[in-house]
Image 1 (spheres, rainbow, N blue to C red):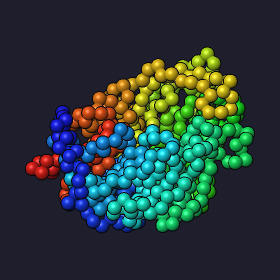
Image 2: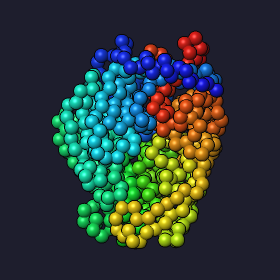
Image 3: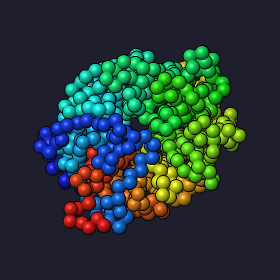
Length: 519
């Protein structure tokens, strides 16, 4: 175990001035989005697949116990870091609500800091930025999309994604696909339709809009379907994949019969037009606030002996899904923890809701709880082992309905009863759990895997962990002082591999000592 309480003060002091080693040029070649090099992390997920798997090999199971702290950057903000940094030209960009920092990836020295005036909207957290050529794209709590100069953080333009006064807000990292900057919104209590919007990266002009709830259906089946997490993209199929949030009213489903498309769903859109190509209802007629915004992970591999283009999602509702991403057809649906709200799975691979597990005035015991069996932090897929590794929270909650709340807002209440967290490795061929690693009462950390067989994540006690991907055993851990709320990322600069994670208000970079044999 390593513990670094004293070094933070020195690292914080060192991080407040302009880094002399900072790279002056800041320009992202669009080709890097298709084929990221080892010295970049140019997208929220690292690449378009959402696998959050690195081919870097310097840090291995045999030397990971020598990892040490390279630097730490203190934000001095109340909000915890929940973003996943981008890395371009040796500069890391990361966020908390209303704030972006550019930090030297070698030293942790601050290059610049942009602070957006605090306005309306939810300040619950922020996931990060996107980049196109020399420009950054950042969403704000009051549901605006900003374009900033990557060199100095100066504002180029400011566009409204949606009206904050109607209940919209935004926390997500946008996604750049070709000449589109795609941004979504939060907002799940005000009976408003979820939406995605595509903007011209140069002018900020609106290119298209997609609504999760078709306007013709809103009056009949409610609305909702917030798009508050970053999707993935298949360049070969030219399909954009996105998860959507809950319908409204949230806990009262009697006023919105049917599956309530396309809420709590995975959808495939044409990124040039915004037109829906296919959709899959992950939680048909959701009545428990189980947003299906978890990462749609794209994998090309054999499934039961046949080559497939797959989409995998460990969904908040407790089910692990494998879909054919060319057409949205189900290949596998299996629970990956305690689930008691469904009668089974139908012929199309969709869970069948049990009406008796809808919230009732006298309460119903439901697994998982409202936070779900997993949540927004990213899973990882390791191609060598075929393991899908994800942070999970086994849990039970009592749900109540309030019919007098009718057809608006939350329309009920829920209370947690019990919960415990694990990192789990799922075999995508069968849905079986291959190993489980206890991480305490509630960790909520994302996952990163590497080609050398390492899995990086965190636990509820504030430890950064390196596990063996093969069996989940702990190979290294270091105390950071707060539970991780981010998804780790990694890069290599000047022949040195770094692993970056965030805990509390501190961004940490870990590496091997210069004197250590990395072979």
